[in-house]
Image (cartoon, rainbow, N blue to C red; front, side, top):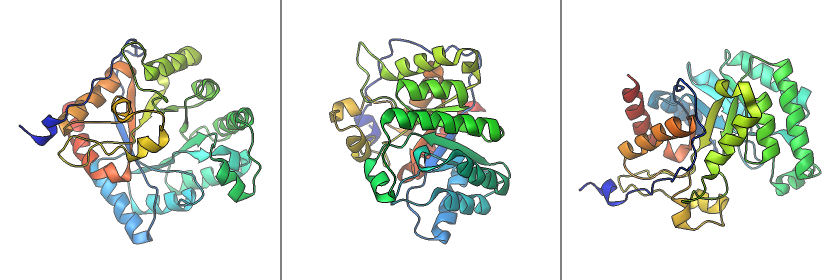
Length: 300
């Protein structure tokens, strides 16, 4: 018996099927860059991601992390097909017109390979460190909506992602964005409830006729990086502190099992939920590259 077979992932119970598209979208895969040691290291990582079959390199926007726009520019200059994006810009840090200036410049310099991801911003300590007043949750959502609407009107050629979980954020995404990033919710699926299915159903209702044109994204925070089949739960334990390890293993942002089992799970995400765009962490890049290969072969 293979080592991966010794650890079988728990199936996600699905009570609803919000996905009723007639044609399944092609898969896209992204990987996040959270650390930059040097230009050489960054360029090598970007070229390696491109060779592994990733479509997008995503950079987050946090104080203490790499500055998104210089990093994305370096990546775009070092690659030929790899797209770059933000996952996600803390929109509360920016005035829409000033952000649009950077977006337009990078869109031009990358030959149209840039995708803008927006979020509300949520870490109060970062606002404190930047000397910026920390707005209320409602004010941050209002600013996100205004920023998204400005970008859609001024730069319609730049694909726009909005990521979040709350009703107001997802309603804005359904009406304005091209790509919607789902966190998978703050709960694990149970025999009675499927939080991810509920969020997608909410977006479908809010989007109306736009829904078929939307690309649905899911962020993966844990997956195996060896042949044990067991994911490292370090990141989801931090982001979802209220869930037990057993519950985390049922969360859609956590992948378990062998390469083939993970590929089957991702196909299931697309067939059941309509999710065709997944983002993993840089620590997962090599292991997920083998999953990409299996999935690409299945599409031939």
